Image (cartoon, rainbow, N blue to C red; front, side, top):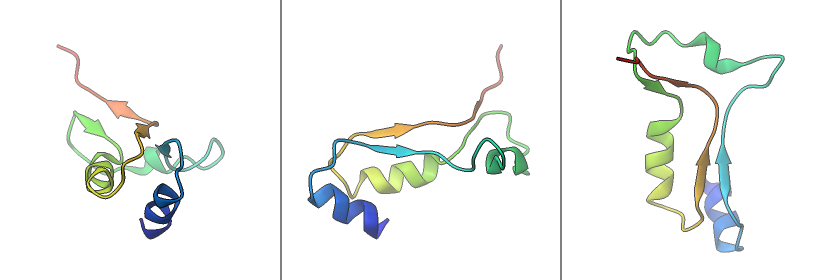
Length: 66
């Protein structure tokens, strides 16, 4: 988070938050039983309080469809 804060001070355009890679997707290793899971949502909330740059949250959004 400190690196992102410093980059924000330097004027970055945005921050993209994701995790893992195509070969090693960390999001698939979740043990969450919650059917409505948005990965990195808590981290994004904390980060948004500390930076001015827009956040782009990418990755897995698991939502139960009615």
